[in-house]
Length: 88
Image (tube, rainbow, N blue to C red):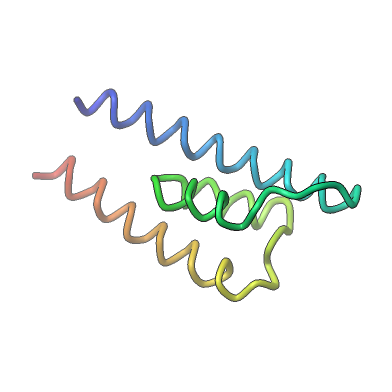
């Protein structure tokens, strides 16, 4: 079960990181964007760390207070949940 959880978390974080980069590219090219709701859903379902790293790396959504504060808070909660899962 732990292996499946690790694979899932790696996949969702990589997907969220890539999605942040893809949305940044679309923003630069003035193309149709990925919705903020989609970014939040990816983060909520385990991809907050990947979203936060992507936000910092691509300098994307850094002026949005909800992302600037929300992603790190969500990331801390998720890391604590995973730590609890593995330490119980």
